[in-house]
Length: 185
Image 1 (spheres, helix red, strand yellow):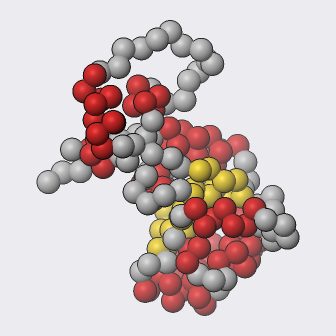
Image 2 (cartoon, rainbow, N blue to C red):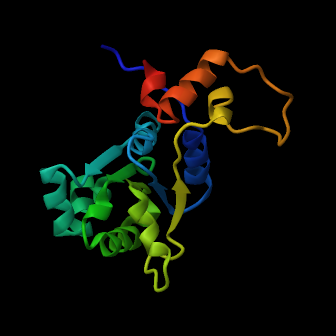
């Protein structure tokens, strides 16, 4: 069975952010809304792409060793080309995730682009005393909306003329909710 692809509005938002700001991009939201898919969608745009998933034992052991251990695997000292993209998936499950990301960003933030994906727990750091302040920008990823089904790209202007909406899409949205999986079938 081949998997269909769906371009989410968030891909364009993240791409714009990566090109214009030197900050980590945090993608937070409920399960199955496409956070990991958005993060991985940039793999072909970068000469080097690294994906670390806290749920994978090998990746977890490497992350626990600290930012320098991950940096050695990536090989920052040998890089001459365009900066790599690094995705840390579900890293918020590590109780020291904030310290890890702060250390990694402080060591290598000038040499790479970083996307962090995870649940709503990524919002926890918004409270006072945030050691990551200024180092990230949070995008809250939501299930599909009628607007995104009609126009999955960001508007070039604020107002658009009405666009027809297929009744089947609306019925499917009402039947299945806004999670992308049923729309990929």
